[in-house]
Image (cartoon, rainbow, N blue to C red; front, side, top):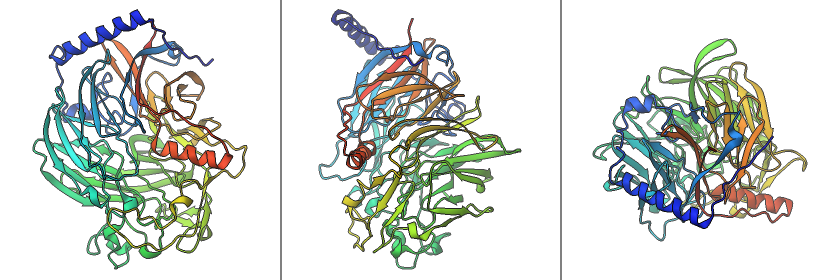
Length: 582
């Protein structure tokens, strides 16, 4: 049975609660609660009660071992406290927690530090942004915690280090020139004394990269471009016309990290421009996973999911790293649900990535097969858009799954995917465009892109949460929705999967083994934030930001155009924190 619970507060009780929260926050800010230093050892083996990274651990699982809230009692969840950010647009960052200190980021390049138990605001940082700054994704996906510092990547391409307890700015370092189209939205990755970031901006014709900075000084340690020059490995997969300089391959989601191998895995965006005619070749390392040695930045391995991509199938989500038995063989896996609609199982072998298997998890009518040894796909070229040639294809340009992260639960052995099935695109004929720094450079008319989704059959379901058994490669369960799904996932030791992502503003809990909906509650806006879970003073909390916008809002506009509807989702950022009723 699905249950929803929202506590009701009278004005006197609300005033008392607010006063108590203010006092508690004041005490915390004055140092009543010590701030635990975030070490490499803690990041490699995080405590269950904290959420120290973008996806809780280096492997990117999105998994909390906490089980006080479980599939038997989740129906008793109620609102513990809420916090209004004062910002609109897409709120996508996870609430990160270390020793009772919570950090969220918001659109507008802001950080808010809160008392994780009461919701009292401790401090706020707001980056002053240039008025003329242009970017396609006005959001932020979180911070990195390391030592006693907090690291933040801003929209105008600055890396900022702050004192985690007080919010004092310690240093700021420029990463790239925002005037040429670069911007940053990702949570940095911290490991071995380095803070790693990458930039968005592929649709402006930038050259993607991952860069590492010294955690103490901010000095750049190395920079590795995801589009190689002609004299570099992979450079021969681009034409010798200088196109690599504007080749795309953006990095806009936090990488995963294998501490044993000291290798970080990053997903890369599509090549630029979208039209493939001026960049013939496979176009490494776009639409790929690249493996980087964290000490040197050297590319040690890669796997390209879509060669010479012209469908906007970014593969910016990194693979999840875990050990598993797969079809009778034990492997150290790197598993990725691709935007191209295929589920990919790779094997980590030293710094290399070896193809193991791949299969469609949503409808894909472009691929005609995969090479059994390399995983290289073959194409139905009638479905490949180009200059002077439009094409109809599935999945859509938003993919079988966009940036929204999957999750892995070691207790169930299931890999959870927030999918959009039966959702296709029709790109009009492409056109040749001259590159101008800082200007949009796609090659297809913008008005023909934003509202070009279609559904082959009107009665087909679209959004669904899928659970894949990693031992067999078989679908264990699928819970379907009557609209699209834009849902970062979290799973827990309490046999639960949490997700928002629907336009009805609901946040839900599902049975991790069956997919049955166990609890749901409405939030003030739509939920496209990454959920997290933590523990303070013996109580488990479930936290998520509610704040609709960016691509979820754009997709809703496309659906309204397709189905002649007027569905709107209210904007406005709110942090919602739940715990069991007492």
